Length: 483
Ligand code: V55
Ligand code: FE
Image 1 (cartoon, rainbow, N blue to C red):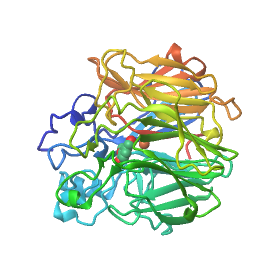
Image 2 (image 1 turned 180 degrees about the vertical axis):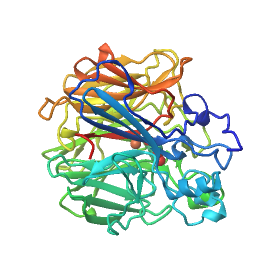
Image 3 (image 1 turned 45 degrees about the vertical axis):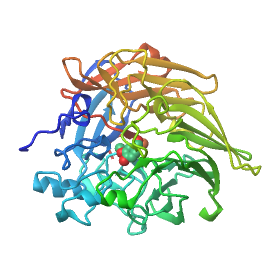
Image 4 (image 1 turned 90 degrees about the vertical axis):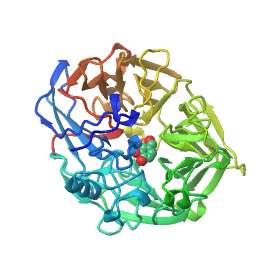
């Protein structure tokens, strides 16, 4: 590489690109890895392969770097590898960035016109016996479960006709189906949304298109045992703006926030839209149906939730109205009201929600989060999604209590992953895995294992990498030995 990375926040400190593809047998462990932990923690995040074409960039535009921690018999093995997207292959051959701004093909080198821009950098999912890396602007990329080699872009044998599919699919623990959706489904800035259902064996069995009220960053959605919930927040696009080299997304608070709910066994024509003045709804922890009510637990803030997205009136990102808090929304399908209720469950600055996946789509009482505790020193404000998480939390929703652990100064933790202690363990009883990066003079990344019974006691084991990784975003746990 003949050019350095820029000295901007997205490329320095915790965000400095690492670009390390590694295979390490038996990580050094402090403490004791619980021997019953048997399976693999996969994750993916943005790690820029090349300096950005336009001089600077936003974190979420980095190339997808997948990593895996495989647990067996008290040992942990590690592997990391870039997803070989078309973008990655073209740019690697050229030894430089050819693609420009996030989701703006008008800023690309003409030599890559029409090529697949996706970075596959946001989440991993295991379904139908296959592991995928996901990004909401493209199709899934299938990965080898052992080597992380990219098997290729996956379109469900031609049956997925949408151009996109979400980074936040939901798996029904009862039927084994995966329910997901793609937005901008018929190309750049299109209003089309595709509802997609994949059966437990991995066959796409339903793809139904509808029009969103307006084109919006639909980063997450929700599913219950009986309903599907689409979320439209006022982060909007504008093709003329993109043509002029501007950003794909801007926050436009004059627009309403809309939540569309349909029965799973009905058509997208039956979506009923609930509405409110602009609020920011981000990651979904879970949702469930009870009688005529649908309950949705999600990270919510008053206005723009993403620091990396500009406000359309030119004002800077406002942290005061952008703090995500766990909020329970209630939608009443029994009445005729267009509004809905919102209750803040905790006042903490928290996001990256996880639950015990055995309770997905059904009533849950436990949750796991990353918190940015502003009362502690050394908060890094430029983590991958614009926040430096410094605290891991296990939340008891029934009692409105939480147990939390501050990971120490000069450190940032990532989305926790819950693993049940055993197949029939009680809800939330098990282990919590979180990757932590420390920049305290001995910069490195480590994987902390907490017992969910005693999160506030700190990790029971820490597996240490001999280098620093760039932070990942979302991941998944695949139980059992190597495939
Ligand atoms: C988010 C993350 C993304 C993205 C769009 O968390 C939204 C929000 C890592 O990429 O492309
Ligand atoms: Fe996400």
